[in-house]
Structures are given as C-alpha cells and as structure tokens.
Amino acid sequence: MKERVEKALEKVRPMLQADGGNVELVEVTADGIVKLRLKGSCGCCPMSSMTLKMGIERIIKEDVPEIKEVIAI
Image (cartoon, rainbow, N blue to C red; front, side, top):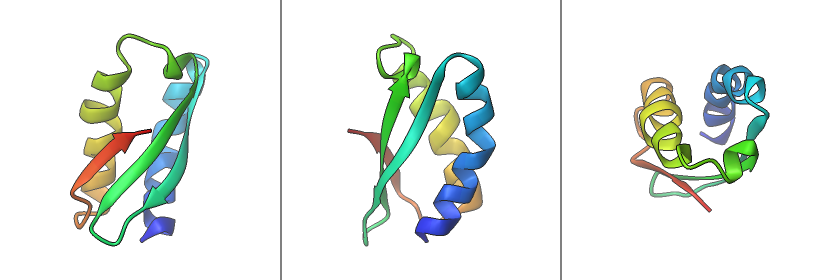
C-alpha cells in the first residue's frame, strides 16, 4: 500500500514544488492512516491544511481507496 500512496504523491509533487514546497511520506499505518511531512514553503504556509485535505488527501483516496485519512506530522 505504501508504494501506491507514493505513486499518488508523485501526481501532487509538481504542484507543490512549483510553489517551493514538497511532501514526504512518513508512514502508512495498518489501519489506513497516511502520515505526511510538508516541507519547504508548504510547511509554514497558512493554506497547508487546505492543501492537505482538499488536494493531497483527495488524490490519495482516489488512487488508494482503502486509505481512511491523511494527516501532517
């Protein structure tokens, strides 16, 4: 499952990198929780929670439906 999540993140990375940020996959738990670390300008952006939930989480859940939630650590 971790490989599928990483593949989904590859769809998102170009958009984040265009704004000076990035995302790092930290962990995919057995119960379907994805833990990410937002890096660069994404780590301190006031819109990062919106990007995480409305962008990154949506794309991951489309590609890996068994994922329940995406959280930033």
